Length: 87
Image 1 (cartoon, rainbow, N blue to C red):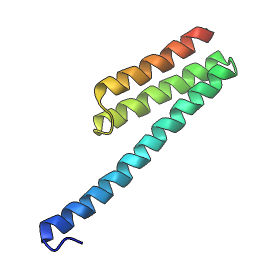
Image 2 (cartoon, helix red, strand yellow; image 1 turned 90 degrees about the vertical axis):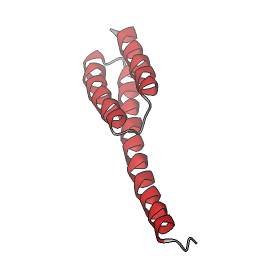
Image 3 (cartoon, rainbow, N blue to C red; image 1 turned 180 degrees about the vertical axis):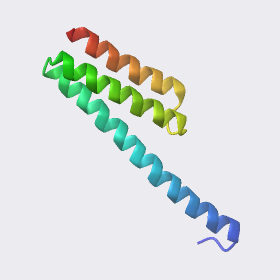
């Protein structure tokens, strides 16, 4: 365990941020699964609605610094491509 006050704070801050990032990543994964489920069921309307929600969730995660912007672009592109394939 750290003895220096600043090192103790770093440990606490790192734990807090890790928990926040984990929660945000979990939200993104759930949103992606909803889109994939709608695509698998060939439900175009549900897929489009869940895609819109997923894009918002992924973009919010990027603005919070959880994902790199290229990662976000890749995820959104793949989801959009999947939804367009059933339309």
